Length: 254
Image (cartoon, rainbow, N blue to C red; front, side, top):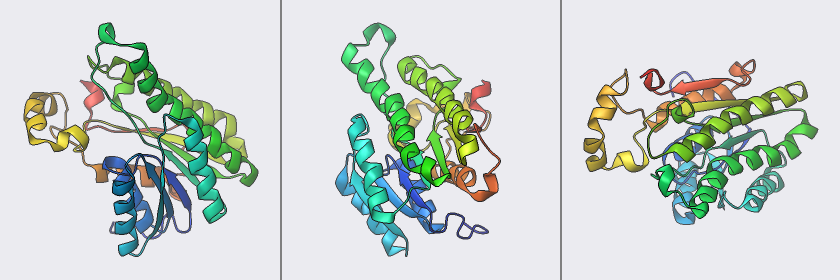
């Protein structure tokens, strides 16, 4: 963390998907920067472990079990944060689902599962956050998007469709509510050492894609994404609005 000191001091931050990966890294970093973190996810035991780690390091956090494909649960998450801390300063939409499905094999059930989790949850995360941010005349919304909003990969076409739409959602919120003191930006990770890539066999299988499909020939880290997110949510980035910050080693150029 070095030179960063209390960049999010006393800010109330809601993050979806904090049980692992990028969400966990953001929760820990933001708490270390003084935020009151409200994490969420479906795996309550893992989510509580993250809260315990934050508290052990001197931070403040709580966990609300949430399945973001059920939009009412997103509302409950945000309402609970405000009931607990009295306000909502930052909303981070992060939870995602990336199944490998070719379009020819896609079922209606799979379509709704992918779209509801990867797009609908972001739409209603923004929607319910605005209920509290608009009366305050302040707030920041960050969407964790993906390099696949621009780079189409076989087998994740519907996921990419959702990610492209998140780009327009970010712009919509940024345009409609900038004069109300609200900023909306997005971070677009490339291949990150998290999830499936934590498996050495998967990394070996994808070695050519990692080394030859990315100008910076390695996987990114969850901490690199968390620090990019921290910048966009800090007061130092207050003039950033509808910004897409790619943290992908240049992968979108290939």
